[in-house]
View 1 (cartoon, chains in turn brown, green):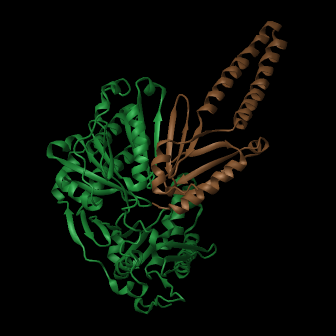
View 2 (cartoon, chains in turn green, yellow):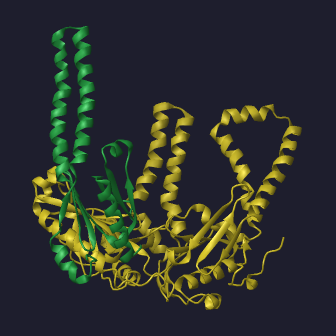
View 3 (cartoon, chains in turn yellow, purple):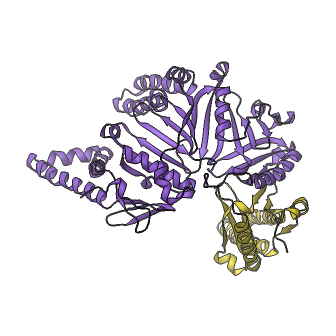
Length: 167
Length: 441
C-alpha cells in the first residue's frame, strides 16, 4: 500500500509516475473551437458573399485558418498537461510556450475542490483544484474523468490529513 | 448597566461575557455624523442647496433628532457587543439587527496588536486585535481599558501558548528584553536619505505651480496639490511619527514591536509565525551600512520589523526572529547569458539556499533580499517563457502563507529543475523541526 513512509520517499521521489489527461478534454475543446469558428466562418463568408460579390466569400478562409491553427495549439497544450502523485507531494506540469511546473506538498493542502460545469458534465469531465494557504499556489488539474477526479480528491484529502502542517 | 469586573471571569462554562469599555459609544456615535459628512463632501452642490433651504428652526430640530439618535446608536451597538475568552477561542458577539459571532481559534493566533490612537491615549483606552488568517477589521476589540487590554493580551497569549486554562490568567505578562531601539536621529537621517521622500516633496512643490501656469484654475491646482502634499507629508513626517521610538523586544511569547509618537502601536508575534523576512537596502543607505527589515505574518497589517539599523544589528535581530537562521553572505548570480533576458538588472538577482532558508535577492539600486524558512513554503513553482527557454533560463517561485511569493529569477534551466525538486523536499522535511503552534506546550 502506498502510504508515503519515509523509506518510500527516496524511490518515489526520484521517479515520478506521470499521468496525462484523458482525451475527453481535448475532444471538448476542439469541438468548441470548431463550433465557434464554424459560426464565424459562416458569417464571414455569407455576409460579404451576398452583399458584395461571390469572390468576397473567401473571407471565410480566415476563421478556417484560425481553426486549423487552434486545432494544433489545443493538441499541443493538451499533451503538455501532466501530473504525478509522489509519496509526499503532487507535481503538475503544463504549458508549451509558457511552461509551468508546480510542486505542492500534501501537508500544505487546505482544501481540495472538484468542479464540473454544464459543458464539462456533458463530456463527462471534472477538474480538481488544490488550495494551500498561499493564494499564489496555482494547482488545478482540468478535464479529468469524474471517477479519477474523485479518487484523486479522496487520496489527496487522506494524505493531506496524515501530513497536515498548517501555516 | 454595569461593567463586569475583570476578576470575576471564571474560565469554566457558562463563559462569562464581557463588554467593551464604556467610552466606546462615543466612538460609535460618530458613524451617522460621518455618513452625513461623507454625503456633503461627495456632493457639495447638492449639500449646499439643501442647507440653504433649511431654516434655523429646522436645523435645530434636525440636531435635536440627530444627536440623540447618534447617541442611541452608539449606546446600542456598545450594549450588544460582547466578548468572551474560552479555553480554545475568543468569541466576539455583536450586531443589533444582524447578529454576528466571530469565533477566533487561539492556537491559530498569528499576532496580537494593541493600538492606542492619540485620542484613545487621552481617554486611557486601547484597541486590541487578534490577527488570524481571514479576520476582518470588524474583529478588533475597540475599546478596552488600557490595563484590561494588557491583561487580556497576556491571557490570550498564555492560553494560545498552551498553559492550562486554570493558570492562564495568573501567568501574567511574559518578561521581555529589548533587542533594538531606533534613535530618532538615525530615523530622521534615514528618511532624509530615502529617494521616495524627496520624490514626493519635489512633486508637491513643482506640480501645483506648473498646473497654475498651464490652467489658471484654482480648483485644478487644489485638487492635485492637496493629495500630493498629503502624500509628501505621509512619506516624510508621517513615517517619522509612525516609526518614532521603534523598539523591538523579545519574550517567551515571541517578538514584541512597539512604536509611534502620537498613535502608539504594539504588536506581539508568537514564535514560528514569521513567514518571510526581507532586508531592503536603498542606494543612499549603502555607504552607512544601514538596512530596513520587513516581515510578513499571515493576516497582519504591519510589515516592518526594523525601520533602520546597521546591517550587523539587523542580522542579529533576524537571527532571533528566525531561530537558527544566518543571513547568507554570498549569493550566486544568474549565468552571464541572463543579460539577454534582463539587461543590466540581471546583476541584481541572486540566490542562496542554506539548511534553513531560501534566500533570493533582486534589485540593483535598491536591493531586496527575501528570506523564507523552508518550513514556511506552501508550494514551489517553476516557470519558463519562450524567450527564457531560448537562453536556457527559468524562474523558481516559492509561495508562502502570507500571500507573498519569493522568486529566484533567471536561473539556469537545469539548476532550476533541480532546485524545484530539492526545495519541495526541503520544505516538507523542514517542517519536522518546526515548533508546535502552542509554543509552550
